[in-house]
Image 1 (cartoon, helix red, strand yellow):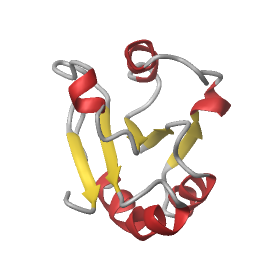
Image 2 (cartoon, rainbow, N blue to C red):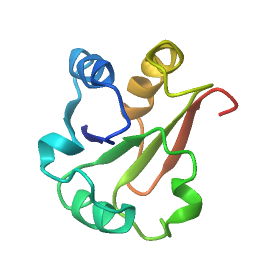
Image 3 (cartoon, rainbow, N blue to C red):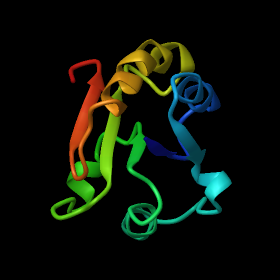
Length: 110
């Protein structure tokens, strides 16, 4: 599964996903740092299977209907690595079974 990790996602997530067999790039590596969500989704869905984010409001900020890219939203107490890292295994597991257009929450209150 090719995954695009949002700017807010820690580099430790990228390394974890690589170790679990998922191709990945960060927004910075893709050359899309600073792009707005709508433009980013349009660019990403042509090159990636899934976007991984900690932006819990993405679903409400963007119309995701009809998108080919799947979205994984990691829900944690904060964006601190210690709170996010405990959800990396769930994120990797979801990537093994997610379908195009799905929006899946993992983590706290998911």
